Length: 396
View 1: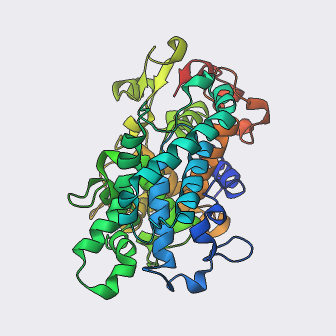
View 2 (view 1 turned 45 degrees about the vertical axis):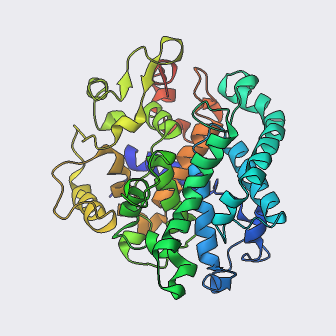
């Protein structure tokens, strides 16, 4: 069957992501280097070997949960520098908090001193770059999130909550032989990677709550299942299409400007759902609150050949439905398109997400004149080709 324009667009975005990964550089993290091969890739043959109190796999996952929480900050490059630098220096000071989470809280003063010192140096190096990219003022550069400037709040809330998760799991687990893999076992205890991402935030006892957003939960699922292949479970509900794409500002901007969202509902439909908020954006533009798309059903019909594929996605991959779904949710439609051609293209949900991130941060900037001429998907972008207002009149 010939590929329609939507299939071409989605696969083009995924192709960009396939060749432009933005995953954390694990080789820069001191306590993880011994678990890697000389080329910087994970030594999968040794994943379940012990390193002190935990297996290699467990340490990777503890670091990635923390990384996912902190990645919600305003400058991804700066956040990852901060995480890597603080982790390396704390380990040099023998505060091995990934292996022994209690050490972070026992030596909280060291953690706060290091966070403050490294934040200052990173701000000096990156503030002007960040401000130019975001049409902002360098003095507003802050990695602590929530407009907070208090290191104690940041250290306890953003660092402490994800670090405390394996600590609590260790306390609750009375079987000594299970303690080296408590976080791994907990994450893999759910029916799908999608359910795991929801429980990571919402579980009554172990949920990270407001310390983590939905995007970050799905980011952890992507890293665990696709980017780094750390899951021991291999069924379809723990593979390439088993988690939602974490729609964020970059995703919303790219998918709006290309016209993709308008394939499934009208602008008026998005206004009614408060996805599009007229005149609420910078400079009187229309604000796209992409998180409000979550759960929104498509008004326009999915092509007939993709309907059974969509049903397969939600019932057997995401495992969010026990019966065929009554509505098609916009945020899951790309799963059906990519899965339908996966055997031929190899393009996964992770590739699609990486593509959105690359295009959104390098080309489709949140300004009135983004870098459309050099954008790798400009020939498929409705905003660039025929409807300029999708670019000029909307912000995320």
